[in-house]
Image (cartoon, rainbow over all chains, first blue to last red; front, side):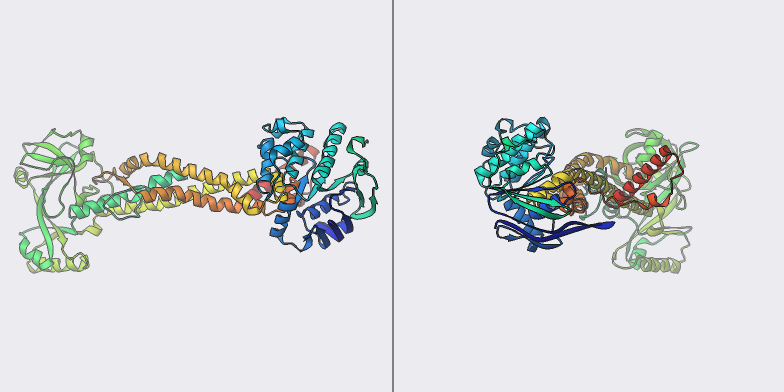
Length: 231
Length: 406
């Protein structure tokens, strides 16, 4: 199993103790697309952060490929993120004073075997806008830059945090289609969190998260192409 | 400004004096040079009757003793000029401008007095029925601060000055006094003990001493040192506080910049950037600022050293030779702000970057805690507008407090 989590628990102390994850179990094969569905506050982002190595679980165990994340120290977690993880964020999180090309280069610069920047920009359809700044792009284009930045390091797992949350319907479908293409072209394992249940159709595995617990795991025998998803 | 002050006070140095002296030491250095090169007295005395056998006294005191005449002459109702006989062994006049005395009828003037009273080189002064030609401006080791009386507090160049004429020219004046300047040969031995031996000798010879003033008690000599000490006391803390202020301003600027970029930093963390890489990145700006500031401070400060030294020594009669800059000091003055700002910025940058990536990516490091001020006051009875304004003030107070302790 490429990704597996067992008995993941996480809580925050802010005045009162808030249990965000209450023993999450999940598994995902290499090269599959997984979607975590759940309403706001269900613990989706926390779960993704733990799998991405930017946060730590209080208890439980997370395996990604050969790495046991729950046993890694800070430096090892940084190495894991550097080598294996790509992130796509809802609000893109681009560096505003860097051009499109430079935003991609920021990550390529620290990767051991990055993909050629030109190739990645061509893959996301932004080769012609390499020298534009993020503020000169539409939301959809910015999300494409974000995808290019995430895949340029050729990560083993791509974590997408509500990648279509800030986009209109058409643009969102374009972005989902691009993510699906990345999965097909590079064989990247993708884990996406969303509250849009329609997106579940494009996933191999759907995890329904509610109040910090996975209440249902659905394995789709057949996945839908993103172009056919409607909501 | 701190950089400017630093260079202003730190770079000038005489080539023939030891390293490590700063610009505020320049009057001290110049006076030391005057003392050594022009053989400053260790004490002077005068006697009210009789004559000192100089050869015998020199042997007894193991000192060089030189006698010279002096007399005060009124040039006007307000201006008095003290004429001093030219000396060759002790308190040798230093020529600031012009030339030395070559023949009778010539006079060397205190430049401050000359300037205040309009005596240019080549002009003449009529006194004692004779006309004296001003051939040079002079400084004397025993009159670095030209006070008329040893107990006076302030030198007033417009009303009192010193001058040097040849011994022969004293015949034109009445009331000439004989003074003796003493310079001990053994520089390692205690001046007080040597002075006591000389005094004992004079008593044995039954010569009535009327004035007896050691250099350490002579404000004409020692005031420059006091003045330098006060420059030093003022300059060092001021320079340091300016540097600290710069550190604070740059620190706040850096802190705000990094806080504003919290989301980007969190994202970079998420992509695998290490903390030390980000620290290095964000340190570049304060480092560059410090380096540019240090270099421009040096460039701006260097031309100001000479005028500032001139201002410092304007109250004193000290020849100011050419100032030669010490390369090491200039380098230190450039590196010092880099080090100071580097250290302070490092702590500031680290204080922000220590937050976890997940927290930084939220774009809000505010803990959401309610301040004590907010809890302290019960505002329910107030109108909404008043409550809103007060709550805002509490928030600003809390933010200012946080900034101060960042």
